[in-house]
Every structure is written in structure tokens, then in C-alpha cells.
Length: 249
Ligand SMILES: C[S@@+](CC[C@H](N)C(=O)[O-])C[C@H]1O[C@@H](n2cnc3c(N)ncnc32)[C@H](O)[C@@H]1O
Image (cartoon, rainbow, N blue to C red; front, side, top):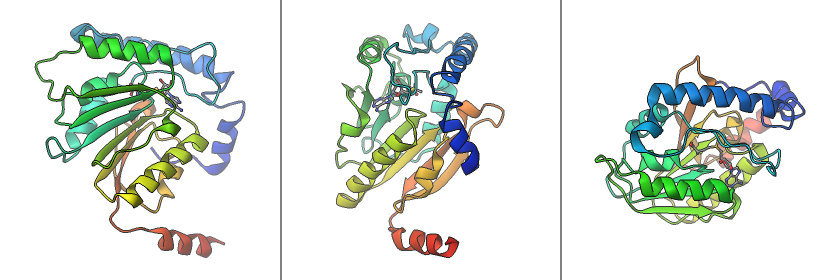
């Protein structure tokens, strides 16, 4: 999805923010209907006996925290099938894992470990129950690590990484999450993919000197299913980005 014009971005950050207190509620109703239709179509929960499809807007939720709604299952499969993953090498980390749908699907791929980081205790508990229930014959990884914590507190290990984000937070938190990732990649250079579904703050990724855009995907007529994949770049582009900034000024 193309990045929004900076002026529009400013407008959407204010009272018209789709995750803010006013439009957030309306957006939530839309997402509720969408998830309902999607579950009828994909039957993810119906097939696996899990509880991932209903969105959840917690009463005490900060406006800057985006509510829970699952990624469309077929989109997660499409993305993970497109990555060249050597079996047993990569760790999958879903930042803002909610009820755990992305974590469950990731366990059908040959990851070394599958990690879910979720702020809400209620969603975290539901994700734990879902992991107990999810036993498809196709499961290839059973090393789950679900943590109820703030994504900002998470410290990356030193393994190759697939970091998955489905619109979990606003620009400021995303910036900090990416800064933490960069610090980890600088101290332990390694292979890393960053998947960002509904990439409304993609500008944060674009300005990272350690990330390079690899792929854009998802159906054009479903903005919530559009995604970008970035890859950790071997070369640090700090100087290149600084030159670009200077040229603009
Ligand atoms: C749109 S949902 C994504 C759900 C899941 N990743 C999936 O694809 O099915 C975003 C989730 O991010 C969580 N979240 C928001 N801010 C967070 C933070 N700072 N740390 C951890 N989780 C957070 C929300 O509670 C919500 O469950």
C-alpha cells in the first residue's frame, strides 16, 4: 500500500485516527463485520477449534493501542510461503500477537521457535488456550513462547528473525520497536525479515538504514490485507539516507 501523504497522515493521527476514540469505535464495528464474514469464508476457527476471529476492544485500552483484530489467515500463509526459510533456523516473533492467529499459523512452518508478544492479559490468555487447541497434522514447530508484555520491553535473541506486525501500534511506538531491532541487528548482524501488514506507518521502515524493501503484496481492494516485507540489509545505509536528507533540504 502506498504511504499516505504526510498531510493526510497528520489528519489521521488526530481525532480522525481510525484507532482513536471516535472513529476507532466505528472502525471496530466495520472490523467486526469483516472478521465475521472472513471466518464464514475461511473457517479458520471452525476448522481448528480455536478462538481467534472476533475482534476485541478493551474498555481500558489506551487510544494509542490498536485493538485486536486477526490478520486474514490466507494472507499469513501467502506471506510465510513466500519467504525463503531454512528449516529450524529462524525465530518468528509476532509483536502484538493478540489471540495468536499469526503465531498458530507460523507453527505450520519450519521455525525454530514461535514467539507472541501481547500487552493485554486477556488476549494473552486466549492465545495460550488457542495454542493448546491447535494441533493440525501440518504443525512443524511446537516451541511456542507467548509473553504478556509491552513490545518495547522485548529483547531480541541473536537468531535469524521473522518479525511480524499487523498494525499493532502508532508511529511513535513503531519507531521505538524498529530502533530496538536496529540495535539488535547492529550488535548481532544476521538474517531478518520484517513483515508489516496494513503498513500505515511504513515511512518508519523506509527511514531505517538497516532495512531494505523486498516485497509488496496483498489484494489491492482489501487495504487491511496489504503488506510489505523488508529485509535486513547487509550494508548500513546511514550515510546514504543522510545524503538524501541533505539533498531535500
Ligand atoms: C491488530 S492486532 C494484531 C493481532 C495478531 N498479530 C494477528 O495478526 O492476528 C494488534 C495487537 O497488538 C497489541 N498491542 C498493541 N500495543 C502493544 C504493545 N505495546 N505491546 C504488545 N502488544 C501490543 C494489541 O493489544 C492487539 O492485540
